[in-house]
Length: 261
Image (cartoon, rainbow, N blue to C red; front, side):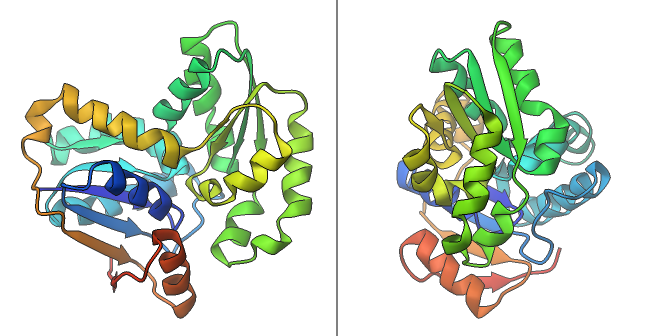
């Protein structure tokens, strides 16, 4: 069986590439819902619906464990997925998110004033403040929604990013550590670090080690994973621009398959 990686678009390829580099022996299926990206402005009901459809596809593709690389899906749909969707449809499978790993990494910095940049839905969900304060009650969390970043990243327009990024960082005020609460933001981490002196927590740097640790602690799931090193990359919409961006994210051209959910 395989490990699935799901994102609302192409940003999750950065996480998938990092996971594959850390755990190269396993078999993977990546799914990007490029037809409906971004999820950040969607209702909670729509996000859960889209996430369930993606999971149906990945489990039908023989995935045993799925990583929701999308912060919005992790924040808005993971709890309901784990409490309702899995017990009802796939009780033997597992779905993991990226919020908790990034929260744990942020708290581990020792910072007491933590900033979060995320999509509007992720910010409105309150997932990051809730989980940070649960682990560090004395922490202060400042969130800023950054709705312009994903469209610029997805449309290869990062050259126009600077004024928007600076506006969002200024809105955070003083924070000691910063969580980039959207998988797409992995692609602009270097730009953020040029403007922010403290620790910057990015999902593609945090999640691979957390997944490796999870598999080590759960041999009952690790033992079900195939070890042929196979890779499958699926998108719900495929254009030449998406193919070019996918190649940049993965460091080489990859075979992309258009699928329907």
